[in-house]
Image (cartoon, rainbow, N blue to C red; front, top):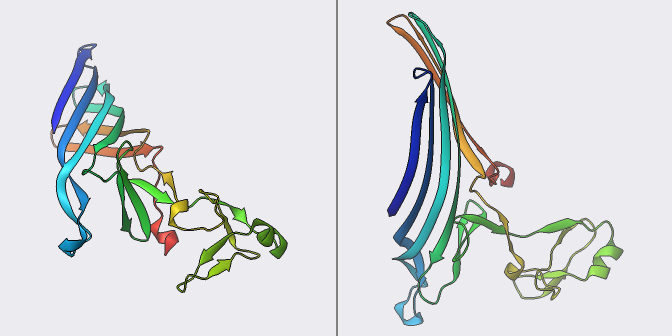
Length: 215
């Protein structure tokens, strides 16, 4: 990984206020990715160092000494950051691949962020048999026979418009990368021997796969 970081720091009001800001950009080569293998190999795929990933982002932080007395100090701090990443290269002849984890699917695709969730979109449920028959959508059973949706079934979005709901009808439905992230901290110090420090981390705007609900 090659990384460039540019930052600035300053202390104000006799070091009562400390501020910092940083911007970074990085490129990762030889990223572990899956590669398709030929039929004669006896394997579908293997791991290879052929992926590239780019990252860029910033963070801003501040720390304020609210009280700075002889025997008691109280400091409050916080930070906010943002980043974007994108896979820029996968093995030759492979634009994307899917990884199944805990019943969910993660898509790895050139040109997208890393780790996005992949699955079906829904448009409610069929309220009665007539609505389901009018829509005419179906899935196929183990014997490749069509099984049509009925009253009370979930209405899935037919991405390719052919009436059959299958793996080709999946979309990118979530992104685990947050819009912003950071922390909030509190530090108290009394006398020579007593101190208390707390730190809260947060992230906003990222999607989470609810495995508990899936189970």
